[in-house]
Length: 236
Ligand SMILES: *Cc1c(COP(=O)(O)O)cnc(C)c1O
Image (cartoon, rainbow, N blue to C red; front, side, top):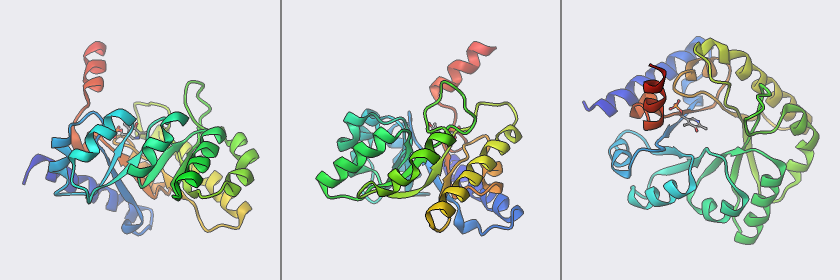
């Protein structure tokens, strides 16, 4: 078996074990294979194992997607500028990183013009870290009804990126806080449970224990990205 196939198998079995530990159905957690910075060639190889991939930069994604099998599904997970919305929508099944009311409004307006119905996760800055994109919990509570009334949007749930930490356990309270916020917002709107996009290579098992319905895993599948290697070398 190839290294990549082994990695997929291992990540899937770790996901399933984490779900079982939490008394959850393993099939209730999806895997987005985050292929950012890796070339189309790598995605084509991974396509033998998986069909859902995540990208975080518009230019890179729009160059890569046409070079990959057309049956693949793509999720956008990076910061999205309003002027790129029209370009991005046709290629992505979902956007995980809707980080402001303005962006949600812009997506709604473009979706009306283009006649599509985008699926979105709203990014929440649960920890209140200053430099991070996302709604604060208070800001999201304040505009939740307006977001739900925006036309042509399918709000799948909430997404978060916890602060960088050495210990995966450090992410647990942030994941739990996102779940509680999602429960509160769903109850307020009389909706069934919202999805939770949370968990990356270092902490996806904790995220699944805390209720994640979709994890975004990159380096544990594809290896370290160049930027990570540079950072590591600089730290040594
Ligand atoms: C890069 C990225 C990931 C994947 O990170 P890994 O630690 O490599 O798994 C997940 N989510 C977002 C938003 C990212 O930008």
